[in-house]
Image 1: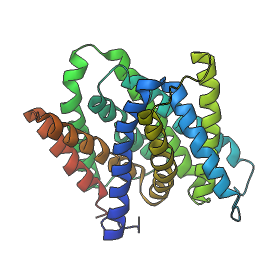
Image 2 (image 1 turned 60 degrees about the vertical axis):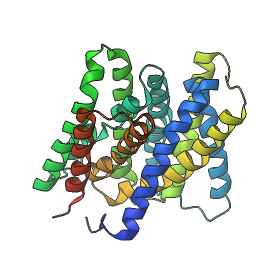
Image 3 (image 1 turned 120 degrees about the vertical axis):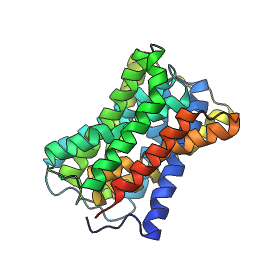
Length: 289
């Protein structure tokens, strides 16, 4: 890859994405206090999709060059916007926020093997080291949660991570050279419709109690956590390998764990060791030589 992730401008882009996503999970947790996982995400992405569609129609559109791209866009919308976020929010009801985010960001495990198998991406020595460090960190942090027997919640969150990884693979394999904003807009629109149908089917109707906190949360996750974050994410996926892009996301659970530790003034040695493994994992995975 010619794109240098250690360029100051690119570091700023990656850092911005990490901070936006980290904030998004805190606001999602707040929003779920007055809504259900399916309804909250349906409203979130319907609002985001409406804004993006308006922006898309205000500029010259660069449509996919072939009709064969539409099944891919639909699949990405269902997997990434629909399943990934609904499963993640549902799992958040079962497991605390910090552990939830860590499990969701097990994407390097799935993305690395998907990239190796389907895209023939070759791992360099430093990237193998990075992958092993990152996964070791995840194992150190999540093992205590697994021992408590919360297998159902863990399975839901891993399914969320797998959905995200497959969506990233589809984008990188088939759509990486297409208009990123166009793809992001339509996959989000399709995912929002899927979530609306899911919400009505499961909840019976849209369930959302408007309060200052819930509306503020909804605005943040719709504009920052969805529109801006997805636009940055698709840009990064097109520039980085599957392993590198997925390792970047590990900065999100690190940020949330650090915030939780500072707030509660409680950081165990296992948590510190896990965080350090993840930090080193990101560094080595991003190396191009």
